[in-house]
Image (cartoon, rainbow over all chains, first blue to last red):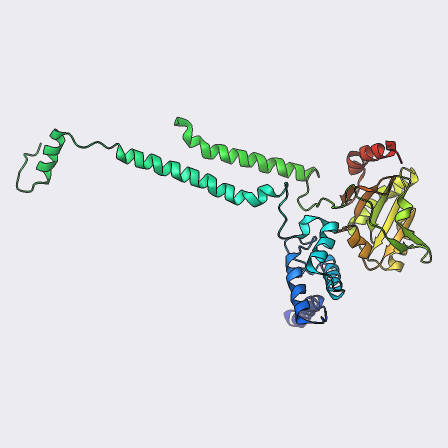
Length: 162
Length: 184
């Protein structure tokens, strides 16, 4: 039974692997290596809207393929990076950008980490201050305590055990 | 200061409450974390002109929207959720509730026509967007998507995902009533 199944399974696996392999291949030819570099950077900075944690450069979603083609054609047509990014933001909103611009809605997003650092620092300083204050208020030993301590530390003197 | 040990418990309860609330919103369909706001709300519908799905020599485009409140529904024969919303669009069309225009998105003409023959055609007309370019202009990121276009041809709402009777009542009906009362 297994012997008969195995070749079929292998075949299926191989075919599957081949299918996955070919899906990603697209051939874009650029006029210069500078254009190609721009294409790579741009497609890394733009988010695919279908698989939202991948860039359009990484994603195999149909929409990502279309957007790559769109970016490619705009580069070939001589548009600059800003024009291409604006084209996509006009249609899909700031969400296509992995690095969102600073606006009133994203202000908290940008300032958040710094706010957290400040809050953390305030707590840290307060904590250290109370610690220091606690150790500083330890008073010196009274005369009686001091004599007892001396006696305890002095190996020659033998204090009678209670 | 005695109740200090309750602070972590309090934080835990607050977070649990927040998660419970968000999950509830997600289950009831009020909130979808993958849903994107459209960048085109209150903006004029992107200008386009495409051949009609049924009559390739005729064109469908932005001028069709002017003068009436209409729906623009992005669909495809390969799209499973479109089958889900399709019966409801048929119902809307039979009730003559609102003109529905279709954008047949990245589809084969033959497949799309067969789909409409088999299941019925709720659309006034469908534009044939084989390359998906018009889809990109409209900011389409998943099929189905339904846009509400006002009398001046401005996009007033975008709903991603299948339109059901419940969604229709909750999201579309109030807006459409308001748009109809606006000056054309």
